[in-house]
Length: 475
Image (tube, rainbow, N blue to C red; front, side):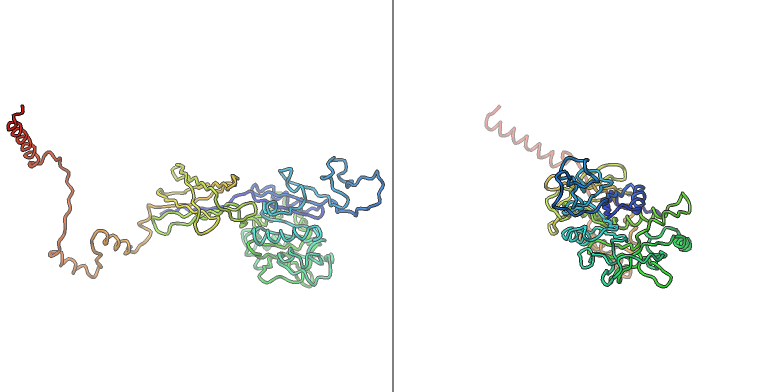
């Protein structure tokens, strides 16, 4: 009486792009928190100096490069000018990654799974980049999170922009650009308390105590209203009113979240003990919520057999760098069976759906099966391998149903020329057995030379040959 189940926890790396308008403490705490999660990679693009006006009348000896980075590079194209912001790349592995600033193409931006915007004004992005971020969430299925600050939400320039459509709150009708420095308390709503990625304690009593120990926040952003369908997961409570503090909703294939607090880092400055770090755990859980359901370039869907002894159905989707389905890819499956034996197979292209590949696998042993899917694009590009699995118990097929399988019995009777007898017709069936012709088929194996007629035939042939020879006078 045992059953083995498969738990697919996914797998990284999940890449998050953090964009900030100025150096702040929030990035410090987010970076330290995500360093403890080996499956999340945080890439930072922090602006350390805004662009300055470029004057036409200057002395010939004045360098056009920004003083912050003048002298570090002789390449004129890579040295930021006065009319360009100075950006600092943090956590990048490739020297070309984010070299040109915020991505402007699908292939460079769709490389990430989520985007975090922190205290950055709308003028930092071009109209093309805003439309690209909108497509990143709606079409690619990525996650977007905007943090509060001086340059965000309240009175911001994101109103009537493609990025403002993605946010779960309305920005219209807000007159103030900043909060009024009134302290607020961060409280989870009833809906937010039901979300496992927002809870940090095992029971409700400890969770309420944990929220009550959070410090007051001084930097926050008011919003006009919450969009229909959005979920208010946390509120900011003042002495006389409350307003949304954490809002999330689905947008197209992806999801967006707005954290209306600009000094969330204060929570990490008042830790009850050195052993517990609730702020770091909260950031890790929010990062996983942003990235967990984001589609990958190779996705595998394993469906159980339709019948007790049928095969598992595997459907693989393959996308290019712009996350469009591609055809003519080569899909190889490497299945490790419960006894450790490796079986290689290939998936065939689905004739009805572009970019979909199907395969069937008959599981003959009880236990867990591990499968590695390796995809190669039509241009020879080798995509990241995806691991999945399933469980099977074919030995328990006869115990899958308690009631008789009447369809199988009828099919067996039709093939063998028999009859399915109901329990109420059993006596009638027994009474007709004496008059029924019951064919008996018995298989028996005997040597052919043991047949008497074969011996007589051989002797007759010899006598006939001897008579013919005497008649013709042959020796």
